[in-house]
Image 1 (tube, one colour):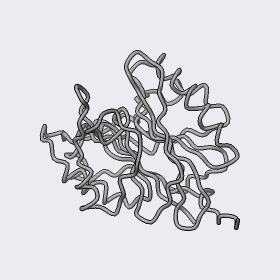
Image 2: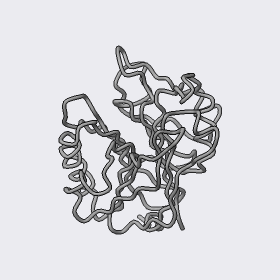
Image 3: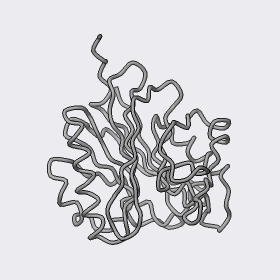
Image 4: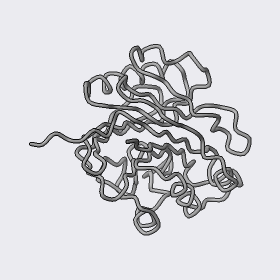
Length: 238
């Protein structure tokens, strides 16, 4: 049995054509067919950080729930721009914000979730810094978080802002780094900035990039997805 995890940098709902259109962003999210979606840049960057993707639109136009999670400001959807959506019917067992080190304020979201009657697993959604020295420090913090959940399944997914295929992930000994494909820039993608990191018991069965005409317009990133095995075991009876 597999579950589908996805990640999407919304670019504050501003597309590659310069238009802000949350409706088409939601159409792209729906097309992913995912159980859990980690989102980046859901809020404006400056000031009070208000949401650019309205929670009410998510509730009305998708099968996802806006879960209770830390928020940067009273009108924000996410924590430092990160938000995690889960399919209706999933059990959310815990949510926490993670402050990340670096020159600019960055944060990640850790969500413990169970799909249907399966056992819980942890998804960390992250958007890492522009400087590699900051990203390495951020990975040290995230690696601690991933190891904290062992032996239960855990993964991190998001816009990691790393252009290199090998450098920058040195602290992730024992984990697997996956790059589903070119996701940036959306109009003519060649950079594999959006990736996922899995613990040893999780197996990636299939993965890819949602590259459609609408996705190329809706944001400056294309969304990534991965079908994972080794997560959905039956929960042990109490």
